[in-house]
Image 1 (spheres, rainbow, N blue to C red):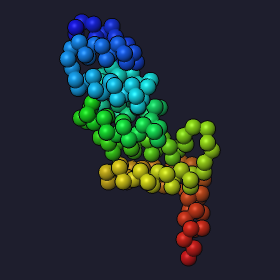
Image 2 (image 1 turned 180 degrees about the horizontal axis):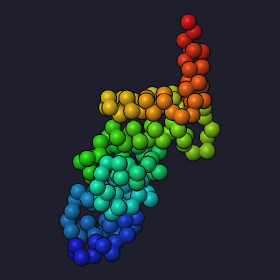
Image 3 (image 1 turned 90 degrees about the vertical axis):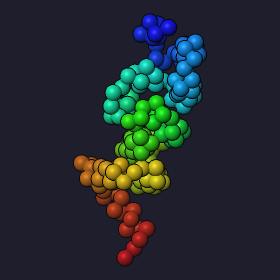
Image 4 (image 1 turned 120 degrees about the vertical axis):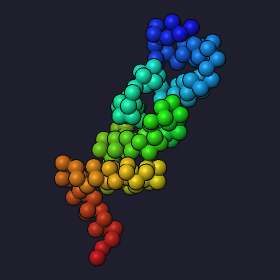
Length: 156
């Protein structure tokens, strides 16, 4: 059974389900089924082989969306104990704030309103890093746009 593993494709989820079923590996079987539903396109084998939280996040980042970040935040740490829910949400919040999502054009102020709702899922270190990344971005227009929104919402 283990001799077949190198031959398996990490994105052929049906094959991986059959493989883990034959091995009676319920942990990986559950994970593959959840990955298949939430993050189609993720190479499960490559994700398993990733040896650091950053390399795991690098694989997840292009696939993170508002519709799957909660699932990944929950199952990611079950697959890799070094990957935290906070790290997954930080990665998505950072991606969303700086790149948006889909074809909808939004302002940084609109994106901040969505990102601030995600802060509850970040630990203090991730929150500090996200706020720092935003506030000290090399894109000066981001800070200016947010300051203008804050001043409009809270006149002195």
